[in-house]
Image 1 (cartoon, rainbow, N blue to C red):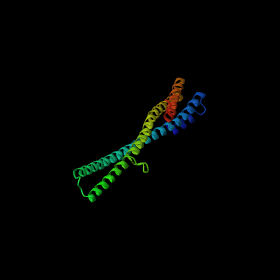
Image 2: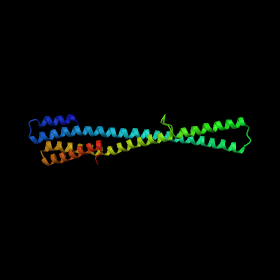
Image 3: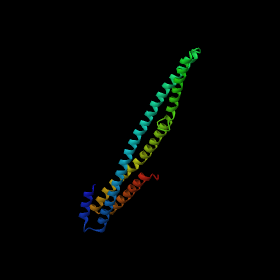
Image 4: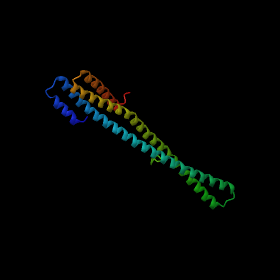
Length: 193
């Protein structure tokens, strides 16, 4: 039910009894809560999707760094083996090998941790875990908004029928469901339980 239908119900009930007016007012309030729940659910899913993508990107970058680091480790080990196989290597060649080996080890260490750019493996893992935590929080919120939307929509229908049929039990059933929808909406935002 949208705002236009709610307004029409209020107009129709205009000079009706207090029960109809109370139902119409309750419908208006629940329609507002429904809009808030819908917005919260939409935002929670967008955030979960976005954070999942960012976590996947951080893990992919971590994996690429690991592969490159392994390549450098293999190259460094190869140089060490060559130097061990040729103990009588001339001093110029040995100096070049040692310089290259030191460069490889420096790069290996930089890939492990790079605090200044926050793109080392350690920093990437922390970033990925942060994105996962935000994603998991949003995914805990989303079902509560779904429950709220369902309860609020059914409550609005019951309250609308209570206006037309004049059955007080439908008003109380709609009010109860609306209250559950409100509680679910609040819990969706704050995760009390």
